Each structure stands twice: as structure tokens, then as C-alpha cells.
Amino acid sequence: MKDVNLLLQHGVNVQKSLELFGDMETYDETLADFLQDIEERLQQLKAFKEIADMGNYSILVHALKSDARYFGFDVLGDMCYQHEEKSRANDIYYVYEHYDELIKEFKQMIQIGLTYLGKQREVAIDHEKVTVATDKTILVVDDSDIIQKFIQKLFMDQYQVVTASDGEEALRIIVESNQYDIVGMLLDLNMPHVDGFTVLDYFQRQQLFTKIPVSIITGIGNDDEVKKAFQYPIIDVLQKPFNERDIKIIVDKMIAK
Image 1: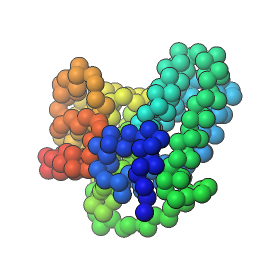
Image 2 (image 1 turned 45 degrees about the vertical axis):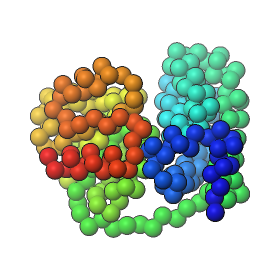
Image 3 (image 1 turned 90 degrees about the horizontal axis):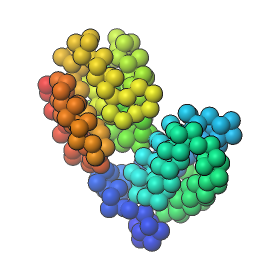
């Protein structure tokens, strides 16, 4: 049996994580997913650093920051935030000087996660494929892989869940939506490239709100952004961190509209 005290002893903010995941079983499953592809993502980060591509570096480290915080790796999340801010400012020297520190913290958290899950080296999980007995689709637009996978798991036996990592990808899916029966969209506001407000503006111009109901999922903090979002005919706003019950309520409300 997994010992959560191992996480607590290493400063993992488990209580905060459970505000999102709800229970340790969901936390464990999602952590295993994260660990399964983290090495590949860190290789991408290294490649962007080596060619001084600060634009893509900042986008990826932003997503890694969010994921780290979802799992309660607060120190790692703060370090990613510093790299995000500096790379956005094109401060290549900061990134180069502190890159090894960031990777060292990543490796420590990876090892803690693997030890906690009882894994020695690689995390390989075979997910049983579930056939969804409906064509109804929910579009989840969020740059966090963790949020995408969390919502996919919650509704895997009710809806097809299609994901997009930014507004540009979401709009492409919507334009080509004849292949999906999109019955609702969960939309983050703060995303790289094309943000959520750009998507809302497009919906307003194309009069899509009556066709595809929209609810906002966004980070806690900016009340002005929330007020601005409510100027559009959205269904509701759900602020992160949320839990399983919260997301199910807002989806039911959105689908029933």
C-alpha cells in the first residue's frame, strides 16, 4: 500500500492536490500518467533551451509549472514560474544559469513520485480502452495535460472528450466540428498563443454560444477577468483548483442548457 507520508516528508502539498483530484486513487493514477511522459517533455525543454527558443521554452515550462502545482510540488512549481517569467522576457542568461537547478528539482520529484508509486525506473500503465456509447463530445481547452486527462477520466464512459492545448487548436476543432457532436466546451482563459478571450470573441462573432454552450475553467486570482468573461453569454465559471464534484456539476449544468 502506498504511503502518503513519503510525499508529506518531502514537502509535497498533498492536501492542496486533493482539492483537484478528490481522492488519493485519482491522484495516484494521474501522477503515474505524468511520470510516464515527463522525460520526453524534459527532453523537449532541453532542446528549446539549447537553440535559445525562448518562446517555446516559456510555453512548455508554463505547462510544467501548472502540472507541478497540481501535484503539490510547490517548490518545483515556483522554479518553473521563474523560468517562465525570465524566458518570456527573453532572459536567456537566467535560463542557462539556473537550468541545471530546475532539472535537479525535477529529477528529485520524479524519484519521489516513482518511489511512492512503487516503481523503480519507468512508469508504464496500460489503460483499458472504453467504448463510449454516445457521439456527444465535450471540448476541453486547457494547456495543462493534467487537467485534460483528469476531465477525460471523469467522463470517459459518458462523453467523448476532445482536448485542445490553446485557443488556436480549439478554433480549428470547432471549424471542423462536423466530425464531432460538440455539446459543450470547458475553456481556460490563460493560455499561450491564443487565449480564451479570443475564443469567446470568435463565438460572439459567429453566434456559436447557442450551438455550443461554454463554461470557463480558470485559475484563482483575477476577478476582473472573471467579470469580463461574464460579459459573454457563458454558462458559468469554475475556478481552479476544482474537484470531481465541481466539474461534474458544471458539465451537467452546461449540457442541460
